[in-house]
Amino acid sequence: MSESWLHSEYHQSSTDIHNDIALVRLSTDEPAGVVPIPYLPESMKIDNSDIAISIEFVGFGETETGS
Image 1 (cartoon, rainbow, N blue to C red):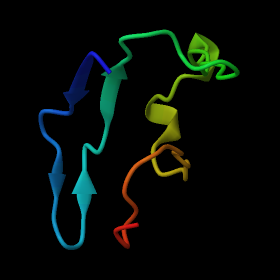
Image 2 (spheres, rainbow, N blue to C red):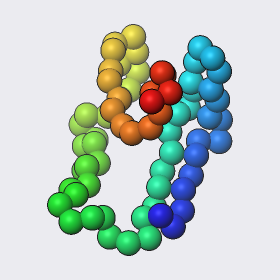
Image 3 (cartoon, one colour):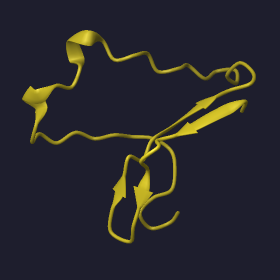
Image 4 (tube, helix red, strand yellow):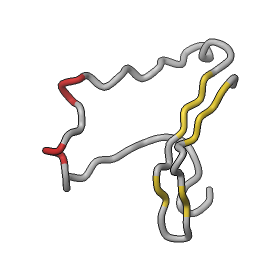
């Protein structure tokens, strides 16, 4: 890894996590067999019409139970 950025307003308490996102720039090419996820097309962007619907984000990191 050559660089990393954490959200400037990341906050975690005993009941909530806010702005839990980070970016990592690798110092080498991705490992063999790893295919990067493409950008979300403009036609699928999240906008005001999506307010109050459920969405699921998937990623890597610490879970709410600390594992």
